[in-house]
Structures are given as structure tokens and as C-alpha cells.
Figure 1: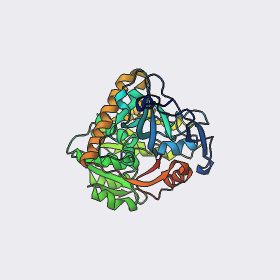
Figure 2: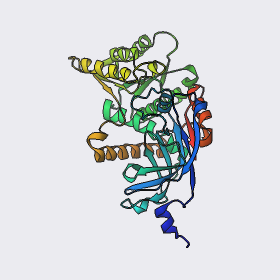
Figure 3: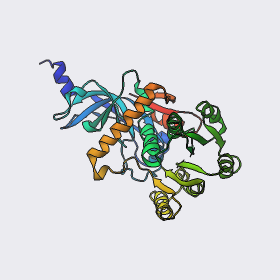
Figure 4: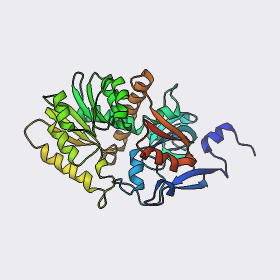
Length: 356
């Protein structure tokens, strides 16, 4: 019996189709990642199957392979924080109009596979004219940058902000979105990123030489209006003291503790505890720890609506040219170990993308 195109779109996969996935078996070097094949997944009620075209190598996967991501699942699991691809199958109860559409999805884990099942309510359409790899650079990085700027710090035109790690994945998107909003930006980065940052209109500061807080105070004696800090530890305290009255520190990681041992939650809990104390002080300053998944357990529909709205804004900024997709390398999924090693090397600028 032949299968109609409509039936194929609903079912999405043939009976014996196999997929490729990358498994993180435990705390291993990048070369310890395992390539496995398996049965193609099926779309359940309210779900879609996405044929992965691009998935990213982010700081989250770097933490996960060390067992240091604060809420990662038990080993073994398939990493992959986000993905972009075509909808191959639509389950009962999901919008049949999604079939064949290129979409993006934030999944936290599971993206490093050639086929991925996602709740239909979690996908965001990718605009025409934007490639899968370009869109991939903007999913987790773009949502993070947009929400920290506009939902946490609530930056306004004419303000001045400090972005630590301005040459990194989130930092690069963040500084471009800030400049598009009319915000002045100081960015810490290694010298090899300075030329690119200047091209974005950013004042670069070399984090490896001299006293960074002192240099920032020279540039902005009255303090900055916001600091975006992925480092944690001592850096959060320095960031707090660089604020002008009414300013905000938005912390979104603890990279300084990446290779520490012990509790992986403790570095984050320390930041949250400090902010709880500091926020009670009568100086109008505020500290926030940003978690992209915050609020999901208290309102799934509201979380989805906000994520969809914010990623749509980021994609629109990409289409307008307000931000550029910086792709460091594109490697096939089977070379995930090489991609992870490259992303961790600190020698590339932009996102390392795995392709399906």
C-alpha cells in the first residue's frame, strides 16, 4: 500500500527509519561523546517531529560534559540546548499547518539528534530568508540577551551598560541588541575581539590586563546603568559596585566555577543569596539571577507566549540587520566531539553549529 503525502506529513517517518544521536555518557572529554543510532521518534498528541537542520554548541553543553550544569539530567542523555529544522510530522491535536515549516525550539537537552520530538506549543517559526544556521545562532543566545536587556534590566536609550564576555555567544548578540536600542556599551573581551566590538560601536576593555573595575570607572565615573555578568564569584561583587544609583546587575552564569569540584548548585545559590541581601539596601540598585526557564513551572502557557514573542523580536532584528549571525564553524552531527572541542578552545569567534 502506498502512503499519501498527507499521511506521510502526519506520520512523518517511514516504518524502519533510523536516526543519529549524540549521547553524553558521563563526565568525559569531548572525545568521549558516543554516536548512536536509534528508531526514528513519533509525534504524540500535541507534538511535532523536527528534522534537525542546525543545533548549537553552547556554554551549557560545556558545563554538562563536566557535570557542572546546575539542573542537568542524570547521565547518560542527549545534549543540545536548542535546534532549528523542518517539521516532518504533526501529531494529533497539533496545528497541521506546521508541517513543512522551518521552526526553532528551545529544549535544554535532546537537540543533538537528527530527529527531535517537541511539543508543538514550543516551536517558533523562522522567517523566510533566514537560514537554519543563522537562526540557530539566535535561539538560546538571542532569547537570553533580549530578556536580560528588556525584561530584567529594562534598558533605555542613552543609558550605559557593561557587558562581560562581550565577544562570546550571548555577549555578541547582547551588545548588538543594546546598540540597536540606543544604549552605550562597554564590553570586556580578549584583544582579538576588540576590532569586531568597535565595529559594533562598543568600547572594548581587555579583561586580562590591568584593573577592569578601575578602567570602567575611568570611562563612566558616575557608574553604569546595568552590568551583565556570566562569570559569578568575585566578578558579581565588582559588578555591583560599578552600578549607578538605580542600576541593575543581571547575572546569568558562574563561568568562574566551571572547573570547580563540589556542588554545582552552590555557585548559583551564592549569587542569589548576595542579591537577596543587596536588594534590601536603600540605594535603588537591583541584582537579578537570570534563568531562561524561570516561570515555566508556574505558568507554561505564559512562558511559551513570552518566549515566542521574544524570539520573534530577535528574528526580526536579525532580518533587519540590527544583529548579525556570527557562525564560527559548521560541522556535521557526527563530528560533535570536534565541534565541542573547538567551542571550548577559546580560539573561535561566533557560534559553533552542528548540522543535520
